[in-house]
Picture 1 (cartoon, rainbow, N blue to C red):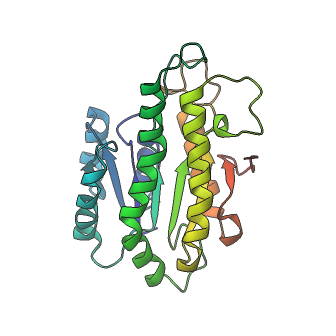
Picture 2 (picture 1 turned 120 degrees about the vertical axis):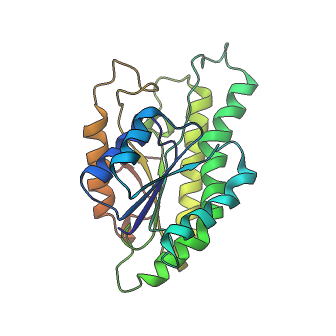
Picture 3 (picture 1 turned 30 degrees about the horizontal axis):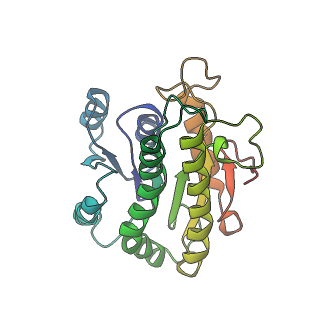
Length: 244
């Protein structure tokens, strides 16, 4: 791939993605966005000159327009091959008797509204890449959007209840993914939702069975295999299709 943009790249899964792509030389240019740059991300950027750190607070949708010129400054007219909407949050108290309106709103803002509006803002660059790589099949090597979702966003697999802010925001993101896949089909842009597994991160906690490296390598192995028939699907990091 010529270019990949990852949101929420300063820690956890996003940082793991950045490390994987740089270490394995999977992309010519990597754009890592975050609200606050971590020391670890800075260190990776010092080692790999093809990693570009861009400031982005996903809650501030009005600043999304600033991203395209920064990407184009590096990429010229090559556009953006892969957008990974990874930035996300989860709240602690999510049982029905404890849930608060502000928790629901914050989760929806970061986990649902931000990916939709950022994709909207970057459509011209994705279209540019899709057109430039029209000799390639519909895939991440042409142009694609991967929305990092969660199995907790699956309505069919919800057998525990609770988690209202997070579940609702991820179910809504899945709905957006499906609509995006339909709306961007004519532009030959692939769109899919992906569950990274239950991963040992600040969000996933120490009891999670999966380490970041295993999840990330699975994610990119799966993304690399996706084709036109996979657009609009909800997939696990290992390629298993999940029910909506």
